[in-house]
Length: 121
Image (cartoon, rainbow, N blue to C red; front, side, top):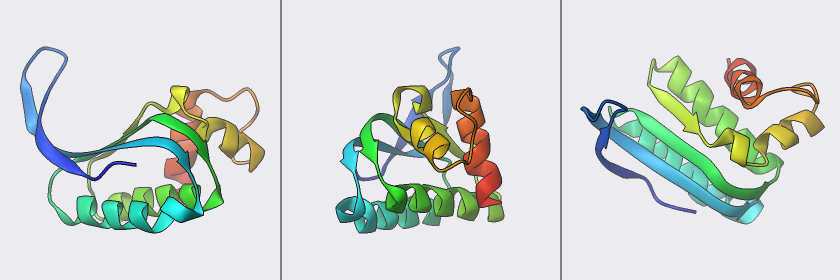
């Protein structure tokens, strides 16, 4: 699991986007990593920068991690913050949301992202 980093991002057209806090998650994430992840999200959401979470490197999650993701999405939404999650198709998160019954078995990664946003609202 990685710590938040800030910096300029390049857009599709090569333009520099505003500074963003990026968090890249990797490997198996469970209860042992939950507190550090929560602290990383608190730190990232305390700045005024947009937040981007990359979950493409995640290989496994448990309920504690999904709860923290939902809380981060809810906090960002409540505070009107720009919060983007990338890499969902490559991660096990959509499958976990299917197992929880939050999305249907034929759902897409976009459906998973919508479920995270809507469940957190």
